[in-house]
Length: 269
Image (cartoon, rainbow, N blue to C red; front, side):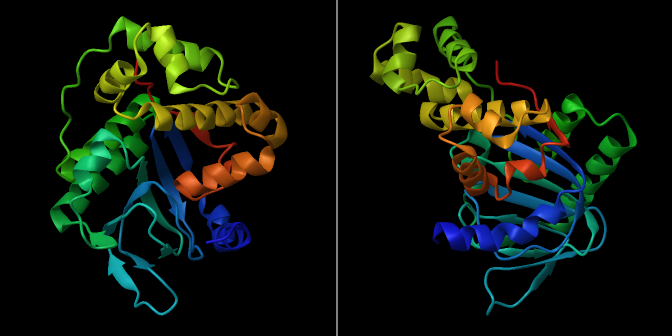
């Protein structure tokens, strides 16, 4: 899909974001009302559950609408949502993440979630909404969603000081065009050994970690009141258009649509 077509297909998603957004490295969570969207796609795997009733989804203008209480949408899958104002919880996962890899057994472009799992996710979402909905509660809710889909937490190797040094260096200088060899140098490891250690400990490849860190940095700047151009340049993007294209490609919405309602999930350190 070309850049112009991509922008047109996503225009309808902006009005959907009337709730709270929680952004993390390789993941995001939305809780709030869902309006109707145009056909669009994004790189993240999407898990969408209506807090009551059912939503409608389809994969193209000629495809039949499917009604479901909840569904998993594959990475890079073109789709359209009819939320009709229903309250929903939506999780987005980087396809390279540990959790996403364990979800990728699904074959269907849009896979309905089992009723028992939907009921449990709804209960967890309502509990989160009834209390103080902050980063800790959002992190717990995302964890409960994954557990109900059969993705139970796995114990990762402890984060080594060498890898930790590289993570801190990247976050301290997000505008730098980091390369894996440079991150490995900070960790005092060969590039090959760095890659071998990084993904199991962090849960993402170093390449995807760098991209999500820059997105995280840009949204944090927007949340502080920076302009789109200032946030883009401050996070190492060429310009505002580059940031917007990248953000839309990753999770399907423009960064400006969530700047006023975003909080941040716990960081993997």
